[in-house]
Structures are given as structure tokens and as C-alpha cells.
Image (cartoon, rainbow, N blue to C red; front, side, top):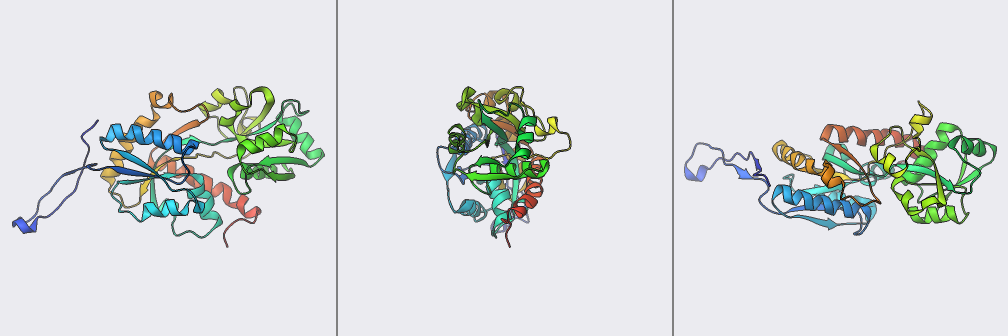
Length: 322
């Protein structure tokens, strides 16, 4: 535990002092961490692990409050309604910072109203077929998809797997019949049951299906370390076809309200370094891919990349806000 301090300057006129500096410790009371997902999912599990580790570093409780629903807007706004004092943290995600602000009018601007600290959970997607599929390689799949219109399974229209599928079709000149199956597990079940020819699912989900499915390609430009753990030997789009675009979806991190004093932001950045250590990462559940990005500038670039990448894709689907 560190003795963390912020620079809080106060003039105590009532005592007859012309001016002076009073230092107040930060934090000196519990911190709230707002999560816009329901309890029990990967985002919530890792958020609670973050909270526990940060609590030890900061020396005060970090309490998780789940506020699901409402397209992530109520949770997001509940942070902005609080003072910019570092005592309310937000578990940001692509829906709250990328998809929702692009598809509907919201009373906030992610990169103007928040200061991101780090990103952790990665939800990079991969393209899967059944183990007995005639498509043995990604090149086989491309040839097959150009020969006939294949059915592709995703969870929900406008969700990251769907956007990855749209992007894939655009990059390679393909046309799919899209079937939305509500959740990633149901999408994979639809693949195994023959409802769809191919499915888009999260890289981290592959271990659940063993040798029943075959991953063809990772829908990503760059290679992250966790790919070798989850999908050893499987190429990324960027590796297989240099110059082709594919997405990186960082699916969870922490942010504070813009206007938070830089001294507090710096203390939170320092404390959050523990979340990128090998010791912490070893505790992450196997079902979660953890792609650590730390620092406001680096995370802001990642978020902006997602916004720029998916604006035209959402526009092509007719989902951009009017």
C-alpha cells in the first residue's frame, strides 16, 4: 500500500491566513466502480478483480456497482453526474465508448468527457467453421464464399462480431446471409447444429468447443500474445493478407470523468500498473483474453481507432445516428 497524496490547495480565510496549502490524502474514502454490464459476465468478473487489486494498492475499498441496461447510457451518465474527484471510476467498453455514441444520440462524448486509464479485456473475434467443414483454410473459405452465398452466424446486428463480419465481407468482396442468434454461445451452437456455414466468435471462447470447430482466421491486424495461448498457429488477417483491415476490440478498462485533477489521474495510473503484472494476469479466467494497454494516450488512440474503423461499417448497415 502506498501513501497516496493529491495537491489540494486551500485558503483558510476564517483563520486569518493570507493563504496556504493544505494537503489532503487521496483516497481517503471508498471508491465506486460503475460497470454497465450485469453481474456474472466476463466484464463484471474482471472488473471485480480490478477493484480488489486496486483496493489493495490504494488502501481503501473499491466497490463495484452494476448498472446494466439502457444501451449502457444510464451507467455512463451516472459517472458524469458525480464530481470529477477520482472517487467514481467507469468500466468503459466498446458499446459505451464506440458503438452506442455512433448509433444514437447520447448526452456525452467519450473522448471529451472521460479520461481513459487502461484497457484490459480483449474481445478480438475469429472466424470458425465446423470441424467437418470442407473449408480447411481461410483461402478455401474465401473461394467457397465467392462461389456461393454462405450463411454467417453472429450474436446481434450491430454488435462487434457482426461488424467484424461486415468488415470481412467488404475487404474480400464477399456477400453473406447473416443470421443473428442473440449470444455468442448460441451462435456457436448454431454453427455446430448446421444453421450457419460459418460463425464469428470471440477468440477466448474457442476452448469451450475443443475439436468440434475449426478456427480459420483471427479477425485482427496485429498479433497479440494471447492469440498464441487461445489459437496457436492460427493467422491474423494482417499476417495472412498484409494491407487488409481487421479490428481490434478492447472490451474493458477504466476511465475517470474529465476534469479530474491530474495528480489524481497520475495516482490512479500508478496504482493500476498492478493490473498489468504477470501475477495479476495469471489469475484472469481462461475464458477471458487479456490484452493490456496502459496510459491515457495509448488507450485514447485505441478507442479512436475503433471509432474511425466502425463509422463507415455502421453507416453501410444504416445504423449510424441521424
